[in-house]
Length: 130
Image 1 (cartoon, rainbow, N blue to C red):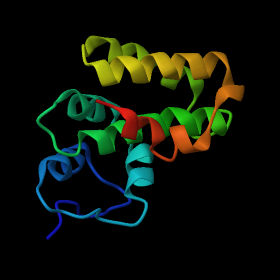
Image 2: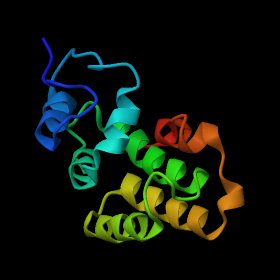
Image 3: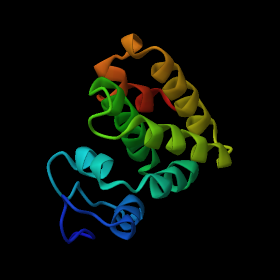
């Protein structure tokens, strides 16, 4: 059973339900890409900030993917002002993983040549998280 009706068009409610559900596999191949395109960043920040969520690192990887893919694509996926607004919004969360993500993201925006696919889009930074 899945909590998601359409894996390529999840609602914020469905993403949250999947995050907290036990023993559910990804509803579709490339679920992380689907989530990154869904534009539910506020929900993802809430999930990452909740240490009781077992899938919080998965959503942290999605946060890195959103920013990394935007920079990698020269903001073809999401406009830079939207990314900067997203990073500003993240300041309301006093969670170390969100703080580190924001600092790395701002550094990447200032120096796009520092982008590494494995860290930003391959989950490398999320795997290093607390």
